[in-house]
Amino acid sequence: MSRDQAQERIRNRQLARLGALFAGFAHEIRNPLSTVSLNLQLVKEDLSQAENPRDKRVNRRLSVIEAEVKRLQAILEEFLGYVRVPRLDLKPVKLNQLLTEMMEFVMPEMEEKGVSMRLFADPKLAAVPLDREKFWAVMVNLFRNALDASEAGDEVMVASKLEGSMVVVQVTDTGKGMSREVQEKAFTPYFSTKKAGTGLGLPTARRLIELHDGELLLNSETDRGSQFVIRLPLETPSDNDEEQER
Image (cartoon, rainbow, N blue to C red):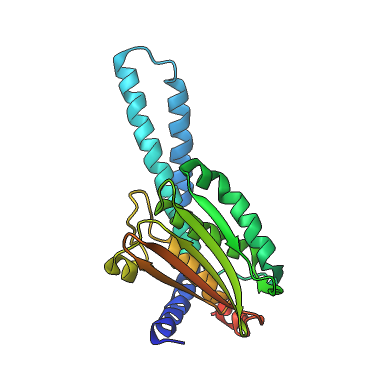
């Protein structure tokens, strides 16, 4: 394990200790936000048939406020997903089959943008110990990152292969790629190059993979595309319970 990975794990343990406190704090924020959102909807319904310029103007401003409340709710949920250390439900999963299902799930978004997808599956792969739900969230995040970086005519390639006692999954796109500076910050919480991004997607994905005793790596080159590499052990993570109790 590299020094950076060791430091990241220490940081994860510190976040886990604060997770309960943050969850309580977020819960106190979530309730009033939900109340605000509900009341905004009710007021907008009252003004839905507005005819005079003043009421129409008020309705437009309420729509702006409502959008911001929804954005705050989304940020709050992503924040909770990042600070919590989830308990994994590890079960043997047929990885190639799962990758196929995931690709079918995001294919409509890819096709709408004119981006193609291909799977290069290693037929020698057997079952891999995974938390299906958490791994699904990681992969969908990587697929959508690849889609955001791509334009019509680009391609997203997904590959699985066996390397000794490790399983490797690669998500490669032929999109715009990242500069060295962006790559160095890609897994930093709250860093995002997207206008509406929270900057927690990739840090959360890396943490979930590390809970599987794996690693998530990034290689990218401007104007040539990016590749995310997941490395997972074939054996059930030995220290998973310990990690989650801290």
